[in-house]
Image (cartoon, rainbow, N blue to C red; front, top):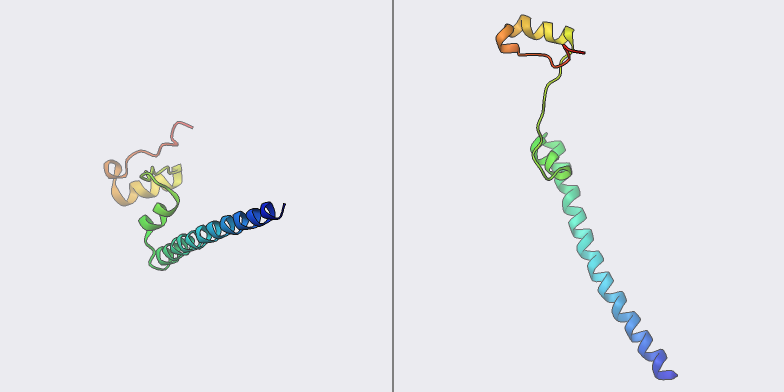
Length: 89
């Protein structure tokens, strides 16, 4: 009975140590992510910021309302301004 208790204590200590080592690695990775986030915000680096939250490419599509589209047409002309994706709604 005594050897079973001793053996279980040794196993528990070993398991605890293995989880403690993983925790330190996780904290280091988390700290790196937080530092990368802070750096991307301070430097206004949008591509680094998006890479923290999204693994794939980010595709943007402008959707302008009629009033905004009219301003774009005034500035750039009809051909350069393009279409406004809401014109059918």
